[in-house]
Image (cartoon, rainbow, N blue to C red; front, top):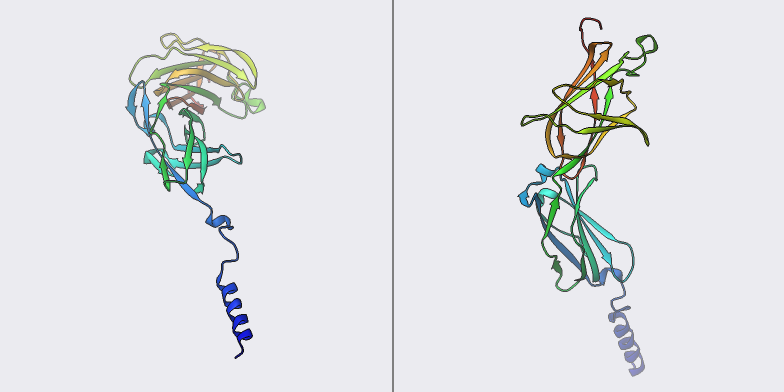
Length: 260
């Protein structure tokens, strides 16, 4: 074999064994993860996810170099979680606490300039979510296709409405409901358990809203009157979450009272 041929073979072997590209694949780029831990307080005291109606903790990473935000979701009850690997770099990290339907309960202060990539997992400062002790209540009342139209027109024939709201632990909750239809305010209804006020029929497309009420368990009693007789009634329990909203329809059922 000639010297020229041997040199050609050696050159080809060296070319084949050398890498075609040095660290040019995105898969070989430096990456790292972020770990987070959290707890919850209510009125300054430690509490549980179930107590405040929390379901999920969201970790949002905002890359300081630009690009799309990255989010990771963890069950609230886990009390900690680690994101999947992300590109190395500086991020602003924000944790938020949400209910199962996505309602925001609390957001922790942003932790700025978190360097991801070295070490492989960087731990955020532990977060304490301070949840409000109050919630929001939004109700509607449903009897038939219409609460207020007469039976001959497919309605329940209700002419007046009364409402009482009591705490599960005992005692009246003297809140004031705002009656509205869409964005139009129709009036208010103030609960007086000892002597409930009678107002005009509350139609099924109305909402009764209390923007701020102490979280906890309640019992509601709704009466639908036809003249002086209570011909429809709705009784239900309400579990109002801390820092979030309870939206509920109260079903009115017919009563077999005199005059109905």
